[in-house]
Each structure stands twice: as structure tokens, then as C-alpha cells.
Image 1: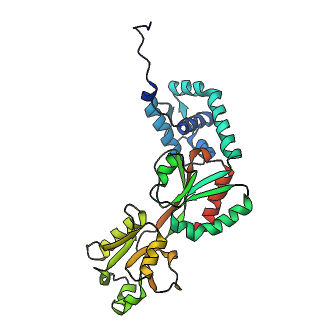
Image 2: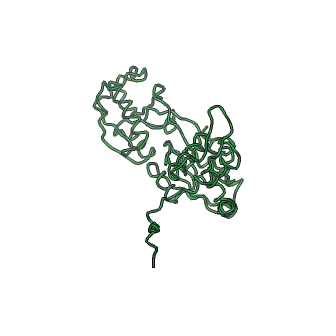
Image 3: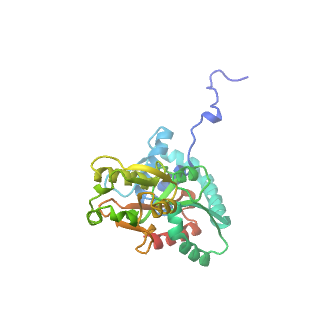
Length: 312
């Protein structure tokens, strides 16, 4: 018989789902006495560490840590001390087991990369990675818009992307930037104001077919906004969309329209195409992302360093 004075138990599916990375960050902040030390150990930013703790406080319903302005040290509240004590060695054991599983045993790294980045950079990156870690299998997924969801679903260990992911369980590092280029069929130049076009006057492209990427891809969004401003307020006339830079470039090469692609997709020797690097556009940022638990994985570290070398 149940005691009527006690509240009924909370069903398992009604309990708050706590991301273990939040507990790990809080545990390290409490143990080291500072956000800075914890962020260095986890290889995340100071702000990310602070956000992890604040989110845990919201779930816990109480303030756990005080950080006085200008002070590098933090102070635990009574509730924070109680939570830290309750986590104790059990959390250390769990994290240690996870570290062994991910750091020493993992033989396959699943990496998401947009097709254009993969074609341009990863043959060289993979060559160097193979020389350093021949025993590791790399499984690549050439995606763009689904990378964050795939990481959250546990389908990817790492990703290179133009997108900034927002979930605290994903850690991102800026690799570098690249420029976009306006590309058009060389055969058009007889009918275009080529001199004005190369000088930045794009109005001669108004009404011509625009070849671009699928909806919500970063390059499409940036290019469409830029062209709308430069074409007198009218958006470009989208004629065809494709999923990757290789496909977009091939369609432009065939004379089916103009487009905006990463500048390295088209060289000066590319047949049947002319290009103009759009220096007035904000450069596209490239991020290396990995799940928080793989922060200390040596193969993730190796892959990140090679990506930084190639794309920085």
C-alpha cells in the first residue's frame, strides 16, 4: 500500500533529461574552482562552460555557482556543494569509462562534410591522416543542412561546415574563411557588359537564369541576399537548383545560367567559364565540430589539426 502522505513517483518519461556534458562541465568547474580551467580541460570556450553551468542551474532550479565580476575563481552555493558531493566518484568513473571507449577503442570516425569541401580539401587531408593513423577508418557523409541533426542523433562524430551549431553537446572551432565568386558562361560575354561586370556592375545579369543551391543552404542564402541588393532590389531569377558545388558549376559550364560558388571551385583555367571574386561579400566561415565527449580524442585532434592546416 502506498503512503498517501508521500507524493507519487515521477514517471521516467516525465523526468528532466540532463545532458551529461552539463554535469561534466559543472563537475570540472567545481573541482578546479574556475570556468577558465574547466574550459581549457574540455577544450571549449569560457562562455560555453558558463552556459553549460547556467543551463544546469535552470534544470536544477537553484543557483549552483557564484562568479564575482573580475574574479577568476568561483564559489559554490550550498546547493552546488551538495550536487558536487552527490556526483562524487561515480561521475568520474562514468567519464573515465566513456573516455576509454571513445579514445582508445574507436576504430571508425564518422565525419560529415559538404560535397564541395570534400572534393577540394579532403584528398590531401586524408592522405596525411592515413600516414598518421592507418588503423582508423574514416566514414564520410557528404551533407550540408543535416549535419547538426546527424551529430545530435549520434550518427556523426565530427563535421566540417559553414554553419555555426547551437547545441551545448557540440563543440566547434573556427578553421578559417573563404570567398565566394560570381561565375558565368564565357559565351555570354559577347552580350554582356563584361568590363562593367568585372568592375562590379552586376545589373547586366538582371533577368538571366540563376543556378544555385537547394533552399536553406548557406551559400544560396548569402548569394541571394547579395545579388538582390546589387540587382536593384529584385531577386535573381532562379532557374535551377542543385545540392552541391560540383553540380552547380557543371550547369554553369554548360551555359545554362550564372551562379555564386566558392572561389576555388573555378580556376582561371576552367573551360567555358569566367569568374569575379566577390570581395564585397562577407567571407564564409568554416567550422570544425565534434561531440563534446570527443574533446580529448587524439584522432579527432589529428583530423582537426589537418583541417586547420588545409583550410586555415
